[in-house]
Length: 473
View 1 (cartoon, rainbow, N blue to C red):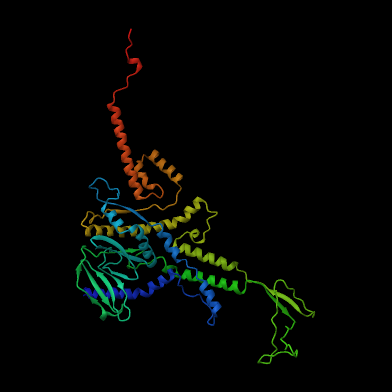
View 2: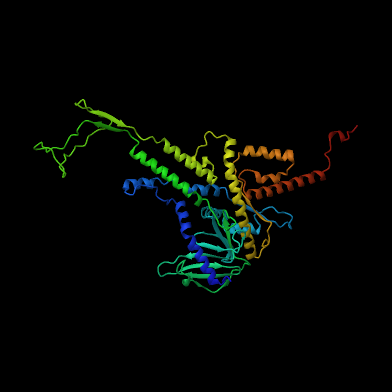
């Protein structure tokens, strides 16, 4: 029978962090430009190593940032229709919790963590008398699931608040379905050094930690955007290193001369030849540059040159590797290469299709996670929505369309299909939830003014005309 005591859970969660530590640290290194060195000879000198350092061309942040910049939650639509209005408004408990937790700015860090390491976490708890949600790093947090592929609620979760250092023990917080524990540990692999404090109720009916996973397979494994791209990143670095070598050592013509002995060093007083320790004459350096001519008196002397190494093949290889990276990562090539001069609007839209599908996948999985966060917050705040499984988050429309094109299309939808104008507001490019709520208030005011004007017109008698006034005889 599996031991589910708090101490056993703490040891198991710390062991998960220890197991994944090296893999996640490697991913973190590649995200921040600390890559493996390209291949070089074993006896490489300092110049080689300097070129290897300069060969690092870090594409990983762009692979993470490109989809993240299209992920912005703009509102929450409640599934409770008891009020007769399921539209989002700024006074809803869910959106108040969002604003109180300052998640407008902090949501990007959660998405970046999930896309970098494969998963990230949030913690929803009561702090200082209010319920707040904050992000937790995958480098410090682990969670246990009975079914890691299908469960949204962890059986238990732990996050490290301070790593052990020297004689100082590490500290962590652990949660299960009802309680929170303070944990101290001496090392991730030191089971005997784990101590669990007294339990404390956290106030929710389930573990308050929520997982944001970029991609989860049926084995419960999470994969981010960085780890699968490491081999392609190494290939690009190796090709750039080879380019730098060819550029440094073989990109210029080399002048050659045969049949002529170089001048040798002579003693300035005696004029005798100076020899080195091996008994060979010491040659003088030949002062040659593009301003000087080479000539020789001996007819057997031959001048020649060695052609420079062409660099076009290296550049084409780099371009090809970046395109492979683009295809595998589902990021359009023009995002990486910056080549958009000759792309038509249709070609640009086709290139963006793959990225749009990937972003939609992320919105689906991250949206489910945010909905659980809102249910947890409502339960801890004793507000409506704790059992709202029909609610959904509203994502900002980040598709780049001109306002004129959008206005023309929305006008046709209104005229030809009879869609209500309010139903089309959210499709206006780059409109925010705050603006939608403001438009709704303005529309209500205009409607009230219009109704008042109609009522006044109906109550006012018809104007008396000149023809109806009697004239004295």
